[in-house]
Length: 169
Image (cartoon, rainbow, N blue to C red; front, top):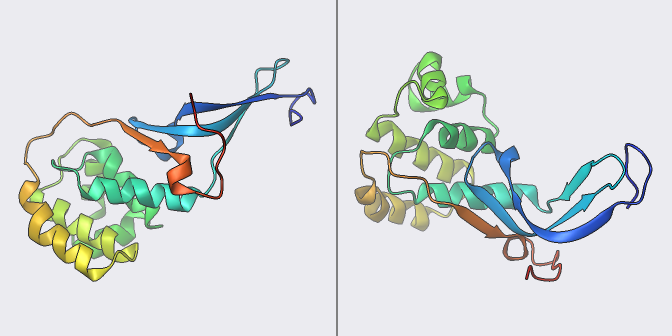
């Protein structure tokens, strides 16, 4: 691959990549192609099937055992393709409340956390039986106190089987 900046040939390798672009601090992608230019240090990361990847991250957040934090709320909202005013209408809160949740200035209440998860599941087309299971079984697990966020290591090959680069060693 040729560098878009300086035109030199880039060297590519399969790596683990810290996926900061999603807005979460704890998502790492395994088996991603990363190309670097030796001349200008430009880096190009090839992430296939972004919608499927972001939906998988969102579905994992639905299973989180503590309240969602601000970055997770923003991630879910953006992954639904909603502006904060749209989410405000769904949840029945004012726009300033959404802003305070997303900035971390205010914690989301447990009922609103649960409602947001159901809205996300519905908007992303998760089957009704899985939503019912989430409500019946998953919500009882949600603890009111914040827990340390776990690291998400997502193998790109599991999200996009057609991609199938050689596995990371």
